[in-house]
Length: 230
Ligand SMILES: [Mg+2]
Image 1 (cartoon, rainbow, N blue to C red):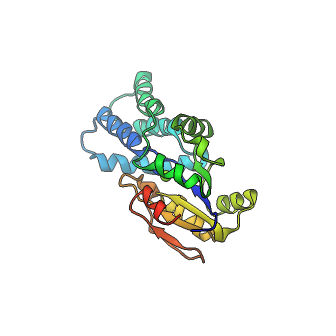
Image 2 (cartoon, rainbow, N blue to C red):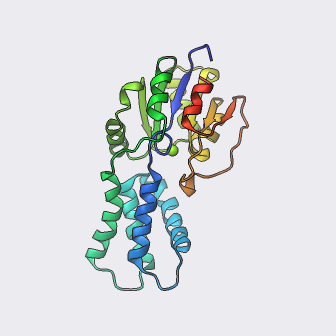
Image 3 (cartoon, rainbow, N blue to C red):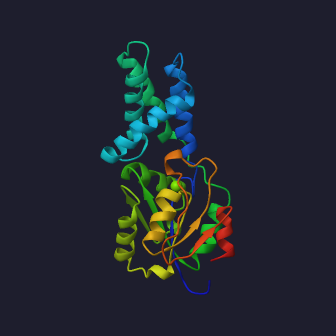
């Protein structure tokens, strides 16, 4: 595209791996729980219901995930729970914070090229301190004109961001892996969007893609495909 566009880009599971670490923490939790009858998907389902409720109050991130695991342990454990048990499952979640940032293939080169032609904004949801630390550790922050961390990426968050930045929606694109948080709400706010799937996207982010707005929707295979369009 010849004209300079505003490319607003998701972070977790779009720029770098994230959900695999939560899946790993859940696998450790499931082993530790050692339930006599519940399968891993059954325990996961129970945890999902806890997460859906807690996200409304506390939001996302590893610290909050640790609370969800503790509640799940208290709900499902077949043996008495000692303080050490709660500490142990807390560790499973907090270990996520120690992972190095692993960039998804092609991200660094693609962002570098895009930053020469377009305005780049990083747009992520979650615990501000956790997200800010990841941005800094990614080594990508210098490629972005702006970074915004919000509690929830819903339609009003997209409308607010466009208003704050003075973006004309027809020149503004959301790029991300989540239909629920990246693609559907940005299209509903009148933006354009580029969907970059990730095979390990968190189950709670998976919904159908919808495009009820006037914007364009690009379906890409990988992040570097952005260079074919921008
Ligand atoms: Mg994401």
